Length: 290
Figure 1: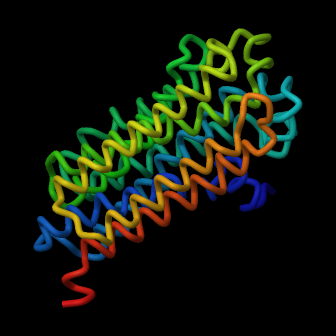
Figure 2 (figure 1 turned 60 degrees about the horizontal axis):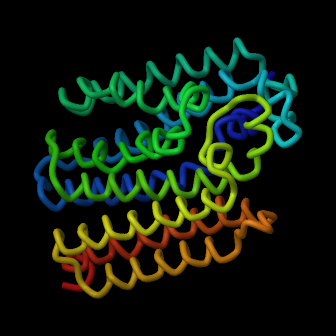
Figure 3 (figure 1 turned 180 degrees about the horizontal axis):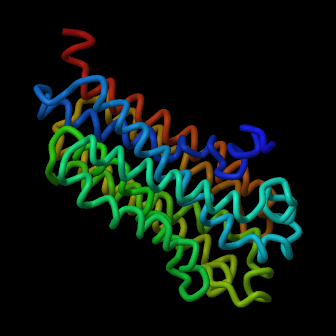
């Protein structure tokens, strides 16, 4: 019987920390504007949507790529190529999480349900995109950028500028760090005719593009801060977020990518959580401090 740990490893459950903090910010925006719509079940539904959608996307990605992963020294020990989880079980897991996601959106509101197929398409198409375009990093970013606007819709039932600005920031932030992650497979992607920015433009230009993406993400967050009339608490959080992203680019160099995993996982996870904490404290400072 497959262990829970193996399923968690299959979908890299710990990486939920990339999208969930921004989802909490989006939900917080919705609460401030539509507090009369709040109940604890809506918060639970929001978290479940993030988990179910991400589980479906990650498991499908592993299913779609397991033959490629088996050829790659870096990925050959992943659950499916290592025969820890069979392809059929992985696909069943995808279908179960997809169904649970749709059911949860039905329990939220009509707009969430109507948009659920679009959200699922965006987050799942990433697995195919690397086979035909080096823009795949931004398709992944688009998938994760759904989190803040989706969380806002849970309470609002409509779109708004502030969560869209957050979504733009997430899109470029994720696209930027996924480019860094792809540096590890530059030669493999080229040999297997897979598409990525490092494969297409080389390591040096890829690092420049990644930095431009992260600069653009920060610009979106600056506009978000002004749009939301944020206080010094928010701007402090954004300064820390900016410092962490800067550090990320200082430790990954064209001549040395040995610390890519630290930049990709540790630093980005820290940036996401810290920024969300400062932003939520700023948003709810009236409730917290009077």
